[in-house]
Image 1: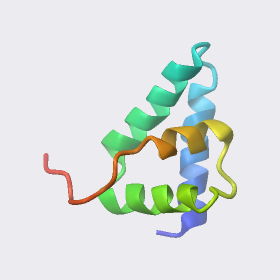
Image 2: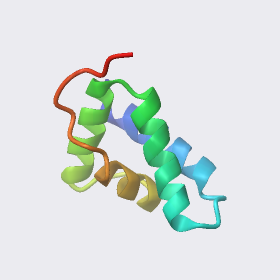
Image 3: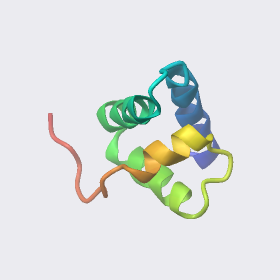
Image 4: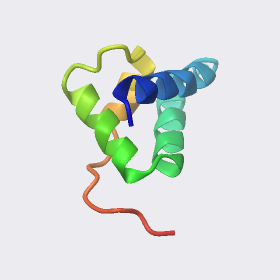
Length: 77
């Protein structure tokens, strides 16, 4: 998937959680959403982008993505 599309999606999620008054809960919300709903390939690509500087990511999205566990295999249902 095109990285700019993933950046936009991560930023959209982070904007939703910006309303959360507790910063740690906001980070957990973004992290949880990406972990549950993004496929492994998408998570790997956004994590690699963030590790390379995360151009275009909001601060909240960058922080959440930096906490993603490494993707080593596809998740099973």
